Image 1: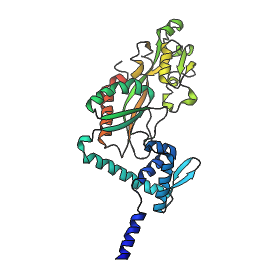
Image 2: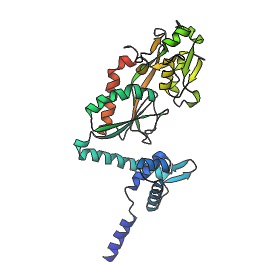
Image 3: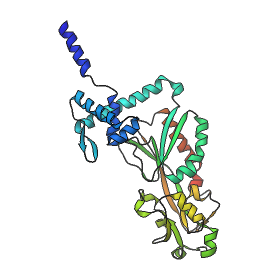
Amino acid sequence: MVSSKHCNRHEVDTMFDWNDLTYFLEVARQGRLVPAAKRLHVDHTTVGRRIVELEKVLNVKLFDRTPNGFVLTEAGHRLLAHAETMENNALAIAENAGQAAALAGTVRLATMEGIASFYIAPNLRDFHALHPAILVELVTSTQLLNLTKREADVSLSFVCPSGSRLIVRKIGRFDLRLYGASAYLERHGTPGSLSDLKDHLFVDYIDDLVQIPAVRWLHDAIQDPQVVFRSSSMVAQQNAAAAGIGLVVLPSFTGARDKRLKPLLTDQQSIKRDLWLAVHEDLRNLSRVKALTEFLTGLIERDRDFLDGRGI
C-alpha cells in the first residue's frame, strides 16, 4: 500500500503542466522568445523557463537553439501536431459550452493598406451592426502576415498565400486604372493613347521596399516610366498624384471614389488583381472567424461590378 502511494506521487510530480503547451505553441510559431512573450503578455524569461521545464519533464529536446531562433526538432514537430489538436479542441469546447457567447471575441484580419483603409474599414460598420460583440482588429502590412504562426486569424491578399494547413480561396478581383489630377493634365496634357505615356511623369512604389510583387502595377501600364516620386505608401502616392506631381495607377476601390483624380485611357487598358481569402483550418469553424469570412465574401460579391471596373 505504501509502495502504491509512492508511485502515484511520483507520477503526479513528473506530469507536465498543460499550460506549458501554450508557451510551446507560441515559440514554435514565432521562432523567438520575445515575439512569443509579447503574444502571451509575459516576460520572455518566463517563456524560456517554461520551455526548459517542459523539455525536462518530457525528457526530450523540443527546440534547437540557433542564432536565427528556436527551430523545432523532430520530437518538437511531433508534439506540435498534438498541441495544435488540443488547442483546436479547447477552442471548440469553449464555444460549445456557451453558444450565447460564441459570436463574441476578437478576430484579427490582415490585408494591405489601401484596401484596408478605403474599402474594408468603411464597410465594417455593417459587420458591427450584425455582430456587435465581435471586435475586428484590422492589420495592414507591406508583407503577407503568417497565418500559420497565428500573426492573424484571417488574411485578404492580392496574391495566393501559402502555408501549412491554410484554407485559401479566390473570392473576387479588382480593377486598376491610370489617374491624373486636373493640375497635372493642364500642364502636361491628357494622354490619348498608351504610346503617349512615354512623355508623362509618374508616381510609384519604392522598388527595393516592395515585399509583394503584385503591387508593382505601374509596370503593367508602361515599361520604363519616368518616375518623379516614390513612396512605400499607396495613400501617399494617391495624395501626391492628386496634388499634380504625376500620374498614378490605383485600384478601383480608391481611385474611382477620389474626385480629385480623373481616370485615363479607360477603353485602352485593363489591369486586374485577384483577391484571396485565407484562414487557418483550425480556426475556420470558430463562429466569430466564420462570421467575418462570410461577411467579407458577401461584401466582395455585392460589389463585384464596382471592384472589377464594370460599375465605375
